[in-house]
Length: 388
Ligand SMILES: *[C@@H]1O[C@H](CO)[C@@H](O)[C@H](O)[C@H]1NC(C)=O
Ligand SMILES: *[C@@H]1O[C@H](CO)[C@@H](O)[C@H](O)[C@H]1NC(C)=O
Ligand SMILES: *[C@@H]1O[C@H](CO)[C@@H](O)[C@H](O)[C@H]1NC(C)=O
Ligand SMILES: *[C@@H]1O[C@H](CO)[C@@H](O)[C@H](O)[C@H]1NC(C)=O
Ligand SMILES: *[C@@H]1O[C@H](CO)[C@@H](O)[C@H](O)[C@H]1NC(C)=O
Image (cartoon, protein in one colour):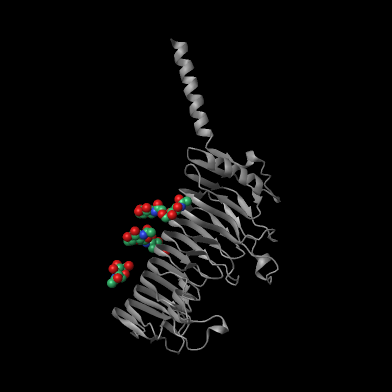
């Protein structure tokens, strides 16, 4: 009898151990070299492929060490939820050998977690000064990914955008650190299009372009406790360059700090006519700290980066229902609130409540607000005086 019990226990523990161990896929067991020189992407792909076939929740584990990876696509769908646990450092190629535009690319996944405390090093310095000799890489991309969590990792010196999302639904990004020099070109922090249900919180971003960029067809985004600086702020847009785009709506930005940025809260649409109207609406900015920012509050519907969009063309985007509440701090420029709305589609229901912005230095020039084609209301404290 006792022998039977011992045998049973042994059997159960073996099954348990197998079940427990089999859901870890360590890249070192797939011959990743981790010497920072040889391309380890084959090992990563094999580990991913096995993990993705697992019928129980699986983790691809990248232990401490430095791994050079060529552009890689982690594709689903997988059989169960999957985690990419990065403890080590990944290093991007400086001469992108393929035509891919994303370095670490996750696609067609449900219930993905990316975590682990590790680092993505885009080696951007090699790309920033270069004139299109090689395609530059966005560091990490998510496309057609749902119900997922990205947390506790660092992205440094991306060649282009740090993190992108396209056609994603229900994604939380938190406890991330994103850094690149303030002068590095096109290094947006987090950029998203055609996505919804996006939560960004406790993210520290210092970069050379937008800290967060919200583009075409994005809805239901909450951004809170984000620190941005240096950078170009949190931007809705640019948007409305052509009629193939989709509306942007339900964006909440709460309890964020901007320090030394060129813009903070910006909505930017192209000065292009559209075949059908596009909307950017239901946007709330609340409890925002502004420190030494050039253009803190800014709607620019005259955006025209290329010479060929003509002069005095009015934007086809209708901006409405935008609230700014409790925005306080200091600016470097002469204009605190700048609303340059579309002449043919004036901004509607813009509300300002407790907006107190002072000059960073005690310059003699006065700080002003400027409005054109804006309808709305203000309440509470307003400094400088509201232009609505
Ligand atoms: C993600 O959700 C969208 C919308 O519900 C769905 O069409 C798509 O198939 C989902 N993708 C995956 C990989 O589950
Ligand atoms: C996203 O979350 C919402 C709310 O919880 C849910 O209704 C929706 O089905 C989710 N989307 C996907 C693609 O699972
Ligand atoms: C954002 O917050 C609002 C209210 O605070 C909530 O209704 C909405 O579901 C949240 N959206 C996401 C994507 O978390
Ligand atoms: C707001 O942000 C500050 C620092 O940026 C943080 O200390 C505080 O906990 C945040 N408040 C909430 C309610 O999250
Ligand atoms: C304006 O936006 C807020 C925040 O998204 C929303 O609660 C409210 O219903 C919107 N108002 C209108 C008239 O759509």
